Length: 310
Image 1 (cartoon, rainbow, N blue to C red):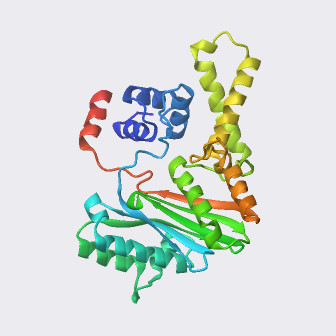
Image 2: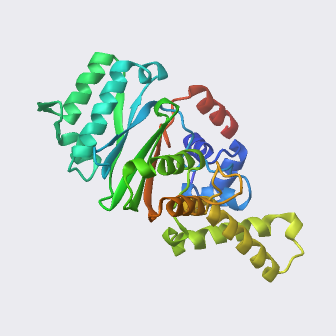
Image 3: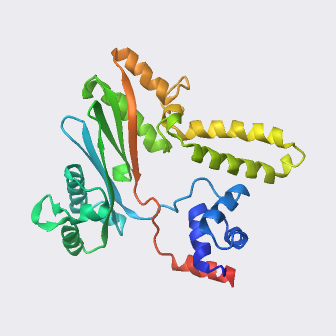
């Protein structure tokens, strides 16, 4: 398969690797992007966690929590410029989208956009968006939404950097929202800062573990320092690395960032639970970061890639 400039550009944005390395990866994997990403990881050439591409889009994340704290929504709405994202009219609109989402019965974005707009039933969400685009004079997009429920407890929100990151954390508990608010807000701040992939080790699939283990094995075998080491030693090395990695991607196993004694998040929540005399069990979280996986046009960079390929 012919390797194009667009393919190299896409792979570089997904991994942060150099252009020549991206071209080599695509050549070695017959142009398969997913396999090329794995090839770069295995050869230690992919930069840390740029899997979804660089964050370049503007906009904000907004949240809405019901009065009883048992239902919530989180939405991301994108704009072309940061100037519009900071505009009061735009921010008011995004808050209305969050109101729409918490009341919505839609299971996907298409159904959501086809619903009647909460502020005016004579138009759909999509039609109202087009009206806002005409009013503000800049392209906008309701990119995603999610609804969260916790009938056996409460949901606590956290917004960071004026809407660049939004988090919802839910927990089952008999305590009141006021009693657990500080604890869950701290956990939400942890999620915002450390971006865990899973709630706890039990949520990690065997498929994820196997894939990560194979990547670590390939990395270890490709490291010249391990050239003389037998397979059983490498196996022990990568198993240890995998266990460490799994702790880093699980919220309850992450070191609690505000702790002075290096306790993990699960231990922190347990200590608050003991202090209150009631159980607090984390049951889930949602984290949206504005622009994840989106990019802006960069004509100069595209030309640079084309020149390298030429």
